Structures are given as C-alpha cells and as structure tokens.
Length: 90
Image (cartoon, rainbow, N blue to C red):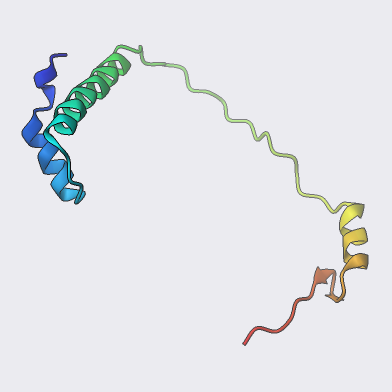
C-alpha cells in the first residue's frame, strides 16, 4: 500500500475531531503509521475463511459451595443467611 492511503489532511481532520494538536512532523508520521495499519488489515483479508463450525464446549466448572466460604463467614464480624453482612448505607 502506498503512503497515499491516508493523506495528511485526513490525519488533521481526525486530530481535530479528537481535539488533539499535532505538529506537521506528527501529521506526516501518523499518516505513514495509518497507512501501515491499513496494510496490515489487507494482510488479514488474505487469511482463508474456515468452513467448519467449531463445536462449543463449556470450559467452566459448575458453581459449587466450598468449605472455604464457611470458614470465611466464621471470620466475618456479622453474617446473615450465609452471606456477609455489611453496614447500612444511607
């Protein structure tokens, strides 16, 4: 991709929208960087599509009560119905 993919005027426009002041040197540098980024996206277009659908598998374990919660509740200053009880917030 050529460096003309993003011209300096477009960089100035984006900078104005973002309310960022850029020097002329920064405008030229960002125009080149934006061109490089767009070139990387063109590389992604070359990745072949996958026709196969992947079977989804739940990798999370089921929720379960553990004894450590009971121990933590015993150390809490105040509990109610198996939960920590905090101060009232007004």
